[in-house]
Length: 429
Image (cartoon, rainbow, N blue to C red; front, side, top):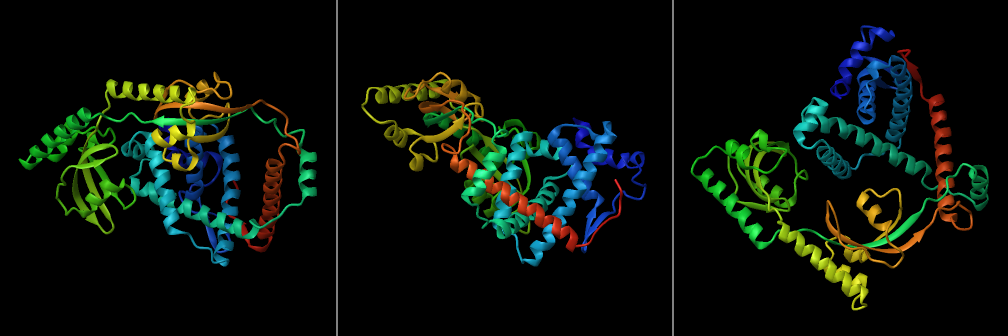
């Protein structure tokens, strides 16, 4: 795996062996109108492909060559579309770009295990990773808005939908079995005893800091944040929106060198120190003590769900009423516990499939645990596998037909752009 994450360097070493030329450590691969496709851009796309697919292209020069040719064409298409987006005065929504970027980076950090692990994977600091992904997100946003502007209002007739179905009906897969379910979620929350124990621990640490103890040493010894404890609690430079609200409000209000009082968030109790302020960014470190639920806390949740289940089964209350009263699902006010319809083989949480496979319509499961807490699930309806038909699945087939039409018209338009805007490939891959 380490070879994969060093692919940029590997690919540059490979240049000579596939005849790309020694001068192309970075340079222009193609010119689209007045925009250049750089060798480093092609390298970046190849590296991302390698990481996502866990392959080492260095071991397969022929595959590397084919992918290079394919990705070069994609980069040329991107430049063509960005030229048109500029002509149409399409601008990026900075707030949305920032939000998407933060969500993507947070997901990557969770997947890697910590910010440090992510930086090791990319062999770059978080700021550089963010900069690279920001540009990609901004470009994709502009292209998406351009496509919406040009093709979002495309209509499709009934005759076109029927023609689409007749053409593709033999290749359209059957509708997979589905289940419609509702749930009640109860999170495992710490008891007052757990809360008090954690608070006393963070209070003792704060007292030691008051007495002059070294912040980084205490963080390494006591902090329960696995991503930063080994670095003395260092979280690096962060911007507004990178942190949970309660933490962020305190952190940005500190002066350089100042240590906060105890701060409570959904993760536990924190002590924060501001190390440096640089424009709209701050460099901070923290110590985290979590409020850990006990086995007794967990048992209490299970028993409560069993009581709720029994009450519903006896007809003393409706599932929806109990969901509104007890569920910790943030959407419960809107959906009253209704999760919707899912393909039985496509649950993202395996426990839901295991439970729903045992239920008949109308039945309610016993409590079961996931990463979110404990649930009880009611199976509302089960639909078996069947062939798709115009009569039963008109809306779905119409949507497929409309997407196919939009994509076809988009590809035809993109081909016209290649004729209108000069494209010069300077490197034969």
